[in-house]
Image (cartoon, rainbow, N blue to C red; front, side):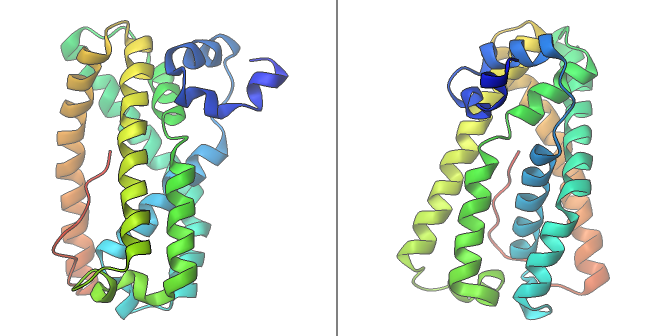
Length: 214
């Protein structure tokens, strides 16, 4: 990518196939900012799922999520990309593991807006954001709106992934959907296993309703 393109990562939200082609031609190293976004959003979501507000202060949850975001983000990116790579073989995908890693990582750009929504909710509601207090009974309209925004961007980045993955795998976005779904099923099993270990280890009572994200 030229200097102008490097400063426009949001182009992937408009032209995912064209964007990932330029990234692969330039062979740019995976940027730590993408890992930070992925890790921070995942950790905030887990803190919400595990209702950690009953055990830890909002400062501890927030700092812990932000400090651990980069290493956790890299683990999530590389693990998910590997599953996409392996399951893609079922559909005769031609992408290499590094190419699929780039395709998945850059599809996470919309995570920026999801993270911003988390920071707004944490800033407004503090520790309550990680307890069932705001999600039982009448949900504040602002929280409802921000959670709706998160869903919209999760759907958007899924569409981006179908196209970036399809580009590197050399098949259509429709076939990419099946590649993603197969990997997602494996991730659900791994994620639920992790939840069981954490819940048992910390003696937690998780939220009855949770959002599964890919």
